[in-house]
Each structure stands twice: as C-alpha cells, then as structure tokens.
Length: 243
Image (cartoon, rainbow, N blue to C red):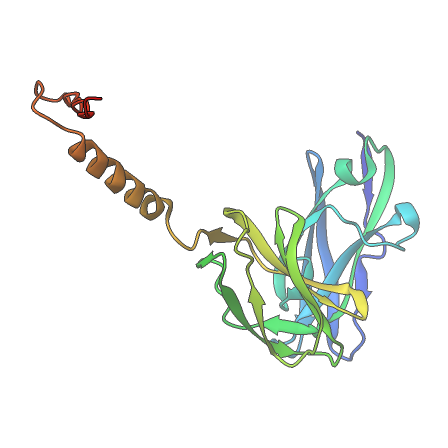
C-alpha cells in the first residue's frame, strides 16, 4: 500500500467569527493515518461534531473508520488527534489522498444525565432515565445486546424522562447498551457505553431450595444400615382373611 499524503484543504472553517480547525500534521503509521489538529474557539464550553473527509470522493461523505478526537461532543483545544484506518476504508489503496476536518457546533437532541453504565441492571426491572432535551422531536429509546435489538419504546415525547422496562426473559450479559434516536431524523443517534444485565434472583439462591429438599429426602430414607448407606426397609405383607 503506497499512499501519498497531500496537505491540501487542511484549514476548515466552522461558521462563526472565532472558530477554526487547523491541521498541524498528518503522518502515516502502518495502516493508520494520524491527523493532528487544533480546534480554536473563544468559548471553551462549546462542543463540536467533527468529521474527517477524504479527497477520494471529493470530500463528499465522511470517513467511517476513524477514532480519537472525532464525532460529537469534541471540546476545543490543541493537540487533538484522529486516527483513520485507510485499509479498512479503501482496501489496498495506492495513490494520493488529501484530508480535511470539518464540523459544526454540536447541540445534542438529548443528553443523558446520571445514567451509570458501571451499574448492573436486573432483568424484570426498569431503568429510570433522565436527560436534557435539545430538540422538540419525539425520540425512540431501545435496548440492544451485541448489536441486536431486545426491546424498546418508540415515539416518546422528548420531555427529559422515561422508564424503560428490561424484559424478564432477557439473557444476562455485559454487552448491553441503549440506543436513543430522534424519531424524525435517523441521523441523530446516541449510544451509551456497554453495561451489564443480570438475573433478578441469583442462580445459587434458586438451586438452594432444591438441594435442601434433596437432603431431607435422603434423611427420611436413612435407616440402620452401614455408615453412610441407607438401609432398605421392606413393608410386611398384609394379612388376608381366611376363606
């Protein structure tokens, strides 16, 4: 894979008087291209949704195989970094590529508050969710396990609170997450980090009554046989009247 990096279009402007993105350096590291940039803003409390674009399609669609200081909720600052896996994106690409970082001020349609993904949630119970609305559009709130939809509620009012039920037949696992979507704009999507769903009653407590009953039966069938072995007892034949 031979790639020539062109530092073209490396300065992108965000609408506003004092907001700029400046690409400082682009380097090739194995299959990854690393973009170093600064995001300048006079208001440090702003958040941005940033995306990386390539010249392969004339900077039309954002690149997907990226990680680092990219996507929603990026804070202003210096020495930001984006890693792009060019092989996953373009395959065995040879040629020239120019990169550009573009974005806008990010106002999320919802912003979850006090949702603890470190907590283990029990199936058959509910999750009380609270968030800060950023849009008047209704929302969809869904529970996913490893990319598969388990349960959800659609068309909910974006009023800042909802109680989501975890079905009692949900499989236990640590690969659950919530997906919240703007019901009128499918591009506005929020995923939580992974969290754990566990049984409502621990397995040990379910097994213990069975073991206790088994022990009681063993005691009742015991007799005067050798130590550790129950004796066999035979009931006497019934007496029948003589004809």
